[in-house]
Length: 165
Image (cartoon, rainbow, N blue to C red; front, side, top):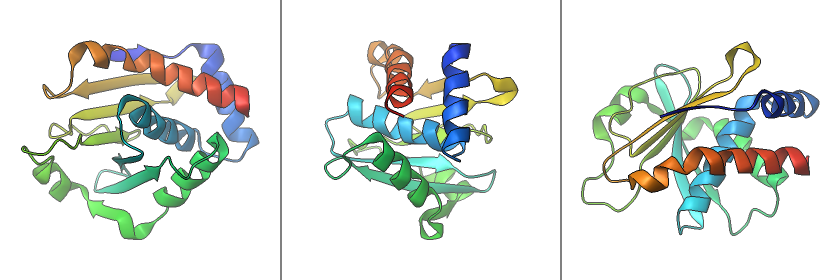
């Protein structure tokens, strides 16, 4: 599924990133973590983010200790820079989710447009040309009707971030 973000909101997000000296991808990645929190019943939300064509990083946000959007953005950026959480992408692609597990394997990517066929949810953002396009795929383990609601919820989260900043 694909979704294009309203140009005005995309421009405001880019402005926020520039003003706070943050990469827009930091904001989008942290928002994906928050989206996962919103759709799950977990306080600790694990997911992965593709770093490049060879590496992926494990991220986990604990929403019992995060009190604001600013804290979420700071924690997300700090974890993203943690070299100890980096894994080779090829081994990750082979492993995937444990078939008997209820844990949802979620992946966020930007510049890397890998297949991530083993992921339950793959969220890809493209910010080229000053626009924001979202493409996502999900496995049969996920409820199709609920997945259709994700872009709208994600946009609501981004709007709230812009409003609070």
